[in-house]
Image 1: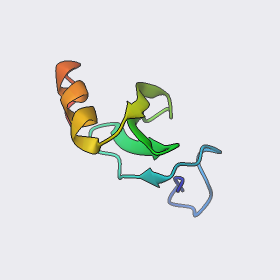
Image 2: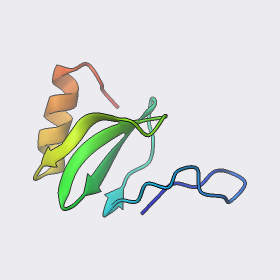
Image 3: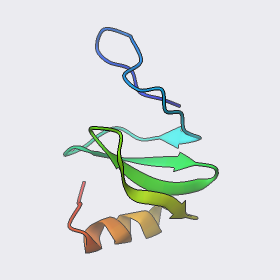
Length: 67
């Protein structure tokens, strides 16, 4: 998985096992079978260290990164 812009071109060279849609500037992503979160700049705000999405959502809530 990756992200493409409205022009149909890739907006990042990053690839993921799974990638969810951006909401409020953040998106949940899965890389190497672990979940994390990126921002609009494709910087990790939560590293991909979690086994399940619920744990990332809890970590995001603790950082006030609610999406």
